[in-house]
Image (cartoon, one colour):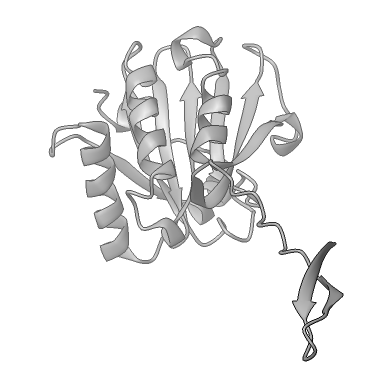
Length: 210
């Protein structure tokens, strides 16, 4: 608290007190994202059986700013550096990367099958597009990279499988974001269908690799 001198009517001065100005809150130099996102990881050895997929996942980190995203992403191994039967998942914070989560249950996923050696570049492009809100953000739940023996599969999960118009728009944006030709073959599968046939992907020969 500081003292101030105020004149009186007779010319004398009285000492008064004033309240110091309130210090401004420090301003963060980081750039916030519209949503927070969480990275997950799953790996199993070839031939290993997993009874409960969700329990096998490891939560890596959650980020909410551009800077914290890069801090996490720069420390992750690239897709061509991880062993086969590995999944990377990046989902909205609070959304579990499983079919049964309330945010996912009525949705589905666009999938693209890749020849080995292409996943690192295309996964990074799609990650940047999702974090940067290139898609309609309220529709996007997350993305998954599945590293397998003979191919890699990138999936984008959205909330509403029944909204055909929105789903086709998502497909178009996904192709542009990844730099894919417009005639690239992609597949959409509703999560309810996956729950019925207990299969994440259809047979490998159902789709053409790029």
